[in-house]
Amino acid sequence: QVQLVESGGGLVQAGASLRLSCAASGRTANKYHMGWFRQAPGKEREFAAAISGNGYMTYYADSVKGRFTISRDNLPNTVHLQMNRLKPEDTAVYSCAASISHYGSNPVLYNYWGQGTQVTVSS
Image (cartoon, rainbow, N blue to C red):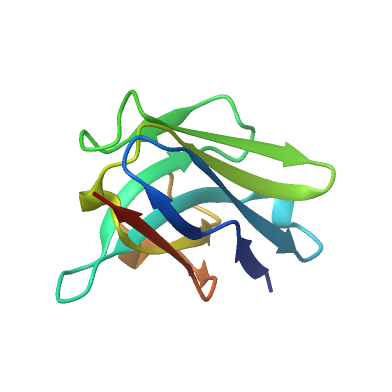
C-alpha cells in the first residue's frame, strides 16, 4: 500500500514558477514509477510527466516539455514537479500517481493516487 500526498499548488501569474511535491509513504514506495497528471474543469485527466522507479528515465507530455521537470528523492520518498513559464492553460488540479509496473502516460495503469493540489495561473 502506498499513500501519496501532494503539496505546493497555488495561484500565480502567467510566466511564474511553482514546485509541486508528492510525498509517498509505504514500505516499497521508492520502487514505484511515478507520474503527474492534471485535470482542468470540464476536461478529462491529462498526463503531464512521469519518472521511472530508479529516477533514470523521465517522460513528458508535449504540452509541458521544456517547461516542467520531474524529479525524485528517495530519502524521503518524494517526487517533485518543477513548473516554469506557467500559462493560464496549465490551470488544473494536479495529482501524483504511483505504478509498480507502468512507466508512462496511461492513468489506468497507475495503482495509487493522491488527492491533488490546485494550480491556478492567471493571465
